[in-house]
Length: 241
Ligand SMILES: *[C@@H]1O[C@H](CO)[C@@H](O)[C@H](O)[C@H]1NC(C)=O
Ligand SMILES: *[C@@H]1O[C@H](CO)[C@@H](O)[C@H](O)[C@H]1NC(C)=O
Ligand SMILES: *[C@@H]1O[C@H](CO)[C@@H](O)[C@H](O)[C@H]1NC(C)=O
Image (cartoon, rainbow, N blue to C red; front, top):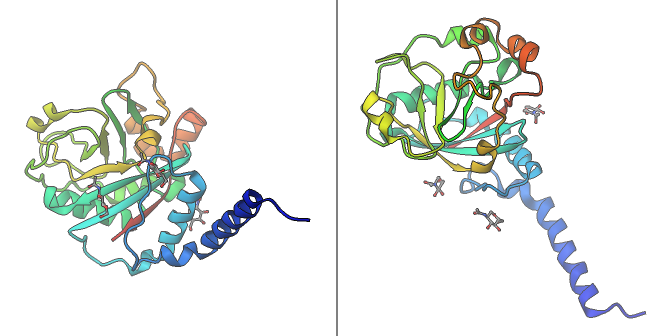
C-alpha cells in the first residue's frame, strides 16, 4: 500500500508540530526573548506561558526594571499583556512591580474587574484578600503626566492628588482628556485587547461598578456572594523582565 503524497506530507507536518510542542518549554526559558502573545493566542498557550513564566518568578530583580511586561491571565478566559515603561511614570511603575511581586492581584481568589464601562475604562485593583488591600493602602506620590491616556494605556485610579494605591484602569478609547486631571499612564496593553473588550460588565447601566467600600472590606467573599458568574477575575499574573 502506498500512501498518497499529500497524506505523507500531512503526516510529517503533524510530526513536526508534535516535536515543536514537546520542545516548547526550553524556548520559553527566561533567558529567551520575551515571548509574544497576541489577541488570537489560545487559552491553552496562554496558560502554558503563564505557568512557565511563573516558575521563574523567584529570579526577578528586586527593583523594577526600566521595562517589564505583566501577563494577566483571566478567567474570561484568556490573557492580556501590559508593557510597563518605567520612564513614563517611575513611582507608578515601581509600585505596580511591588504589588505584582506580592501577588496583590491574585491572592484571595483573584482581583475582580469590578468596573467595566464600555467605550471608557476597565478598572480593577482591590485585592480578593481584604488584608492585602489594607497592606497596600498607603498612597504614593503622583508622577508627572508624561504620556497621554490614549486607547490601551494604563493609569492608576485616584481620589485626587497623591492618592494612588493599587487600583488601575485600562483606557478603552482615547481618554486624553484625563491627562489634565493628573492620571499618568505607566503601561500599555499590547496583546489580548479582545479579552479586555469582552470582560463582563458586572453592573450594566451603572458606570460606578461594584460597591468599592464593601469589596475593600470583605474582599472576594463580597464578590462571590453578589456577582458569582457575573464578573471576571485575575487568575494568575506573570512578570517578564
Ligand atoms: C497572532 O498570531 C498568529 C499566530 O502567530 C498570527 O497568525 C496572527 O496574525 C496574529 N494576530 C495578530 C492580530 O497579530
Ligand atoms: C512590548 O514589549 C515587547 C517586548 O519588549 C516588544 O516586543 C513589543 O514591541 C512592545 N509592544 C509595544 C506596542 O510597545
Ligand atoms: C495559577 O498558578 C498556580 C501556581 O502555579 C497554579 O497552581 C494554578 O493552577 C494556576 N491557576 C490556574 C487557574 O491556572
